[in-house]
Amino acid sequence: MSKIIVIIGAPGAGKGTQSRLLSEEYGYPQISTGDILREMARADTPLGRKVKETMAAGLLVSDEILGEVIRARTSQPDCNNGYILDGYPRTLDQASLLEELASQQGKQIRFARIVVPEEALFKRLTGRRECSKCREIYNIYFRPPKVDGVCDLDGAPLTQRSDDHPEPVSRRLEEYKRSTAPLIDYYSKSGRLIEINGEQPVDVVFEKLLAAADGPNN
Ligand code: AP5
Image 1: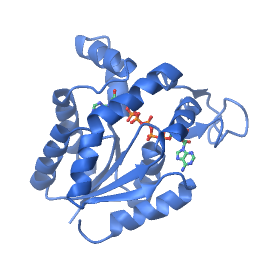
Image 2: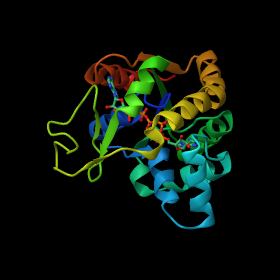
Image 3: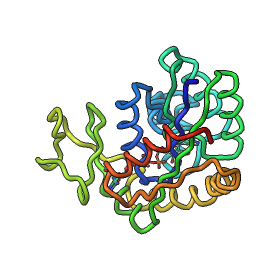
Image 4: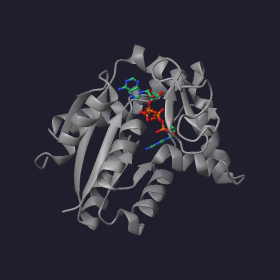
């Protein structure tokens, strides 16, 4: 049966970094709700402006909008064999929609949570830089590019996300505790969540995620 691999974690835990690696390994698309919403926020429409404001405030976009986004994206043909969810679900309502979709699509869900203490998250987020072309992720403290401000892979300039400045980062971490902690409790109690220490090197976290994704049904 094809799979949905769900990566859960606080802002900066490494969901994007690991989802990219999993996508290469399995050939499944990486579905980042943050990337989809950032694209929507670029449109000068009432919906685009609403999404942009909500993200800039470090709050979660409504479950209703996310429902439409996730239904539309996961019904694309490239998802037929499986897909990786990076940043979805983040609320109990989103989790129940995911269960519904998995059963309609005939897919099994594997959940893994990357756990990183809050003190480390702040530095990861404020130090993050992203390639403006290929989206490779760097960190000025932990994974600097060879040449300052330039992508190692394609030479394109690196950019900083507007919500990676100190104030929005603090708000995102608060919102995570408020809205996503109940979801983690729910998955933990149901015994379906595999927890991985995200303070290990990227390749070690990746090995553990592969084991979680390939492990027995949960
Ligand atoms: P989104 O884009 O998903 O942001 P996020 O959850 O805040 O997570 P990040 O992308 O910031 O971090 P990450 O865990 O992917 O870490 P990364 O791999 O980049 O969402 C943005 C906004 O969109 C939300 O605030 C919300 O408004 C909205 N949104 C999105 N989904 C939504 C939903 N489902 N419902 C409602 N609203 C939604 O790594 C971070 C840094 O750490 C990098 O510099 C990296 O190099 C470094 N790093 C990674 N792994 C390691 C390691 N093992 N060791 C050392 N450094 C590491």
